[in-house]
Image (cartoon, rainbow, N blue to C red; front, side, top):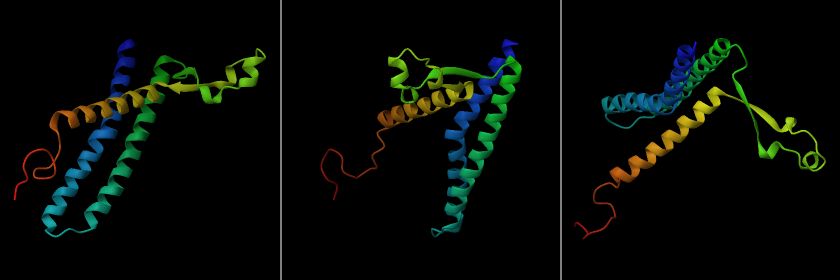
Length: 147
């Protein structure tokens, strides 16, 4: 039972990382090859890039939603966690001893996986930026100018 749960969560994590990383990289790679074959810059490959990234993201998102539903069937319950979102909490009810249940919002395991994957992608990008120092050669930067 736990193996199925861990496997489904791992598939969701892989799918969410592919949504943010593999999907755009695939379409950028394809566009760069189409553009290099064309010689002169054309608009067609860029339109293909835009449409391709969007359609692939929708397909991956539908697959992730299906995995989330499957996870719910495996655990035998709604795959959600109840949290209180501060901006949905009523101040009037809290002062008068009211219940905080209306401020609770269901959060699925897919929501948690997606947030963690975006956080990992942002941290990876920041590390890449710091480590590689992507300043193009001969553009600004320290040192004497190259004439």
